Image 1 (tube, rainbow, N blue to C red):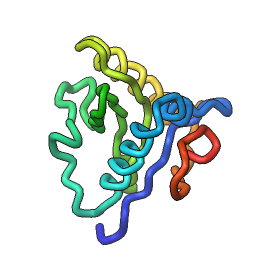
Image 2: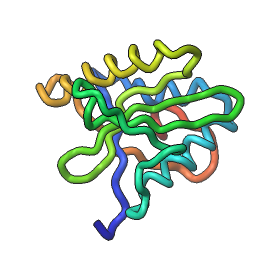
Image 3: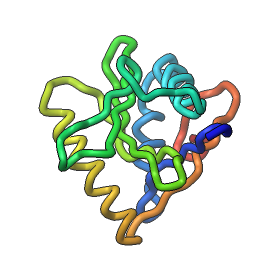
Image 4: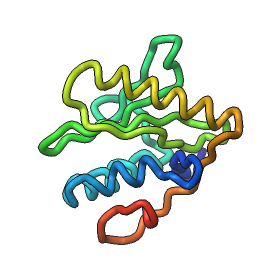
Length: 137
């Protein structure tokens, strides 16, 4: 794959959970997330720790976790679709170990909603500078 990967975000009935989640974080964290997501678009990105963790359990095979840390640990769960593009499913602040399992279940449900056609995806476009919000994310 010579071109940059495209990034999409999960949307459901007009709701943008990824955009809402990120817009509620402090501006420095938003900028770090923007930077890390841009790293994922590079064809040479290998999806390896410490930036990305791949889940190995059969139930969650194909899911990845983007790991961002500033003053808190933020995680964004995503998968790679058949075209090789990244689909962001769920973001959360990791406060305890069980948070990841709960987030994986949410991400799994969202991926199933995409497969059944009851939800959709929207291309993620970055706006230079500024904060994230549900409209510009």
